[in-house]
Amino acid sequence: MSELLDIADRVVALARPGEEVEVVVGRSTSTEVRVYEGAVEEFSSATSAGIGVRVVAGHRQGFAHAGSLDDDVLAETLAEARDNATFATEDEWLGLAEPDGVPVPDLDLYREGLAEVPAEAKIDLAMALERAVRAADPRISGIDAADFADGISEGAVVTTTGIRSVSRDANCYLSVSCLASDGDDTQTGFGFSVGRTLEELDVDAAAGDAAMRATRLLGATKPASGRVTVVLDPYVTAQFLGIIGSTLSGEAVLKGRSLFADRLGEEVAASSITLIDDPTNPLAYTASETDGEGLASRRNVLIEGGRLEKFVHNAYTARRSGTTSTGNAVRGFASTPGAGCRALSLVPGTATQEELLTQVGEGVLVSSVSGLHSGVNPVSGDFSTGAQGLRITGGELGAPLREFTIASTLQRMLAEVAAVGGDLEWLPMRAAGLSLVVHDVTLSGS
Image (cartoon, rainbow, N blue to C red; front, side, top):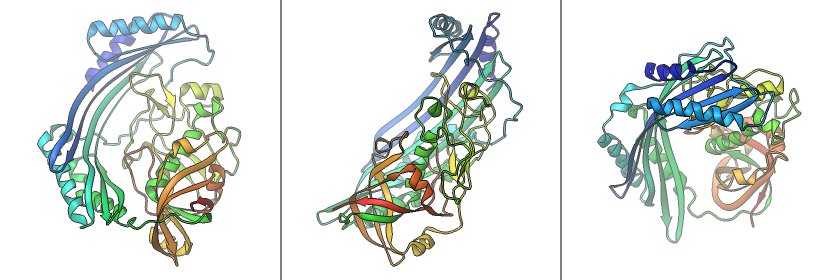
């Protein structure tokens, strides 16, 4: 990583009087494998490196990036950023992040050995996953995709305002989608496993989850419409939290795209809800030691006991909002920083999903949703999405259900949370999942 710091240092040293200059240098390698019927269907291995330069002068900002770290390209990128600044609109809030005294955590996210794993081992793992799914249940009739993917990245941020930071991480995952058939009825299921080394990946767990999700939906029927209590599967909860997190961005607030814009300090959820954004948790798939502006990652409590405590900010949104950055700049070297949640999770309860089902008695387990993002209005909070799952009868899972819609508002769903499960799962996304019980949801079926 010292090489990346040296590159950034050289470019920042070229800053002119009156300029603020930020240099972001990144380098990454990734592998993706897909197998189908015992053969490699797709294989890709890619390496990328590049630089992004931001120049702020006279309340104007210019940005340029390049996918090369050659010396002549570095100078050209700085010159282009300077030129772009001359055409930009003045904005009194523009400026780079400044050191805030928060120490950079040592998270041990990098695994040297992942870069040394031969391609054959990655292919073998994907093939083992496909075989395991087929062997999990005789009703498995096909595999849509059995995938392995990994990524190793490192980056450096140096600015004229005094930031000089580096970070690196590695991760990998397995994922599979399968078909289960019984006569003319066919259903799909998915499973995955995440880790930072191949040894942390669990083929049997991913395969078993996919087979279970597909086979338990065989014979699904369309339910009658009504108002029900739902239990959100951890994967569904993670997607739901992603939607909530997007409305808690300082950028969304400033743009008038957040239903929580004027509600800081108010009760916005049930008292059982404490929502945290914590990229310093090494269990999080998106954990990182620094944010996109080089500030230290930190744990931010956004909703505590149902009360809205904080929005997440980068340097710009914080300055405009009269507060300080929460270490939530999100970007790559090819873009200017936005502001967003980085590793969301709810503080879990203690109950297992089975115990929650017993408490609910009658309702619906929502095992998957479709079209979630297009079905949510972040300003009004209106929420509607297609779903499938299983009936909860007598506190146990019953008949499978398909082709129904669940609808409410984000505000109402947060307020109607009746229980938070203890089955926290870290998933290959920016939010962790757990089982979540929500009362009074409209179910539209037949």
